[in-house]
Image (tube, rainbow, N blue to C red; front, top):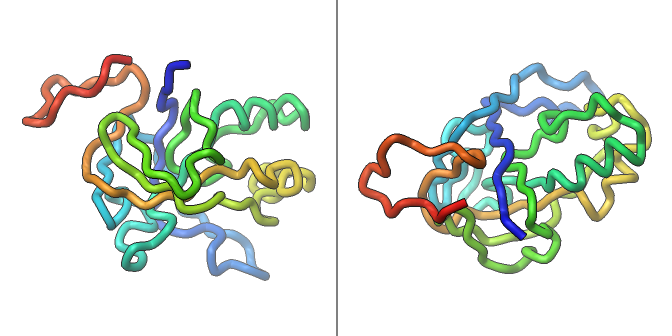
Length: 170
């Protein structure tokens, strides 16, 4: 099966971390056509960039197939990728299989560190009390960035590769 990157997001600040007992923050989630992955540091411009040395969640992944199943099984037709607050939305990757493994996507290397476990904030983000429980075991993947490079949304190409090897054919 072909592997695709369908959405890329960053956010300048935390809406949920550190907000226990108070309303979430209002930092926007910005959708990009491409994002710079910086080895050992995170996604440039994201709230977790340079968060902590060797942080296990420098980037988060989420499967489009899971989002589509969530929409269908819980009848959440308005569920959008941005509500998860994850960074990279893929199609064709079984993310749980990547925990503890190094993998490459568009020439950028990552190390899957752990499941990106859902918490009670997911219920608020999706405006449905069933979401946290439904997403258990399917909340995505946290990863460290092992090599620097650009990730691009599926089908998006830069006019030049700026000295880098061309991305694999999609």
